[in-house]
Image (tube, rainbow, N blue to C red):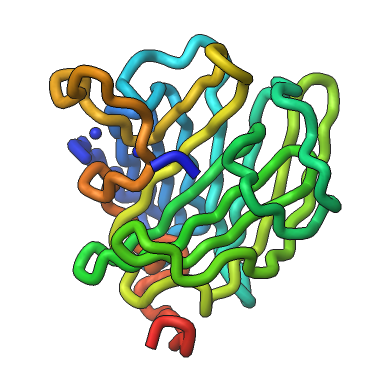
Length: 235
């Protein structure tokens, strides 16, 4: 769990009841809204094209998609399979502590007013790790998660359903990361990286630098009329 731009242009085309809104971000993130009254975003897609320190990724980018679900937010990952490091020893489908030391894709969901956030780590071998944190301090670790992954022809795909009560209330920012490799070849990639000019001498990847998280609202996916279910976990 290593401790890690939102300028956007908006173009809108209206055509009767059908509308498409395209947001283009510097990280090559695009989201399309297609519905009759522009109330629901059915899918949000993000591509990780930079390392943690704003260098370009030199391979096909990891893609993360968020979709609406009844019991929680659906998170889908599509990525090259690097097979480095080897698979964790834990059982697929179960939490695995220290998963951040393996090949993994992570998404963080933040309430920027309280600094409460959720961290979801997914591994191509089927293990996962879900943590609740506040200001970098771990409140709960190893939450159960419905997650399946498969590896085919040098690629892996995974799908998880993140229960609504895991999310802190009023999530308004997010960041995502991908990690692979071993030793000096370990690569840390970030959706929203640290700008090159802000990196200090000797600084390494830190995924818990919340100031670099960017705008994210569950209503953009679930619809304006949707209300996040209350959670006793954050009271």
